Image 1 (spheres, rainbow, N blue to C red):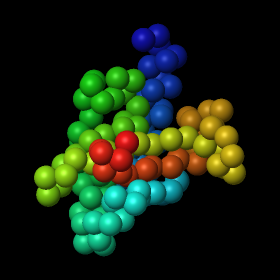
Image 2 (image 1 turned 90 degrees about the vertical axis):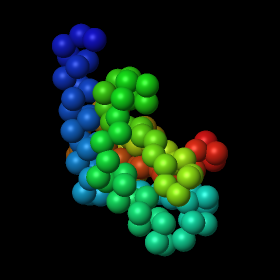
Image 3 (image 1 turned 60 degrees about the vertical axis):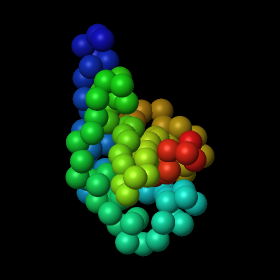
Image 4 (image 1 turned 120 degrees about the horizontal axis):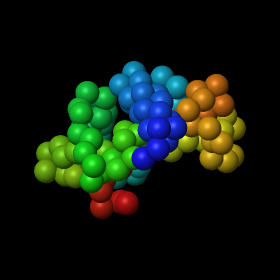
Length: 113
């Protein structure tokens, strides 16, 4: 990875971690499968996503912390962070710029993917 690519990945990772941990700077979407688990389980899932450090090269080859997997009550779940422009009509041209990027984290059952 070239130096400018590494710096870009670090900037994106920092913004993704900040969003994932504090839930500011974007939106969180639960799929129908997650919604069906009920509010108590949803809270446990969201807390696990916020507090866990489950990134490895297999799930995070670019080092951006934009994807993760976890298991709760025997059910495998994943989350994915995507980058949109502020209208959410198109992908963000520069996910390193929080003034022009809306992060959207989708949390789903792995079987829904």
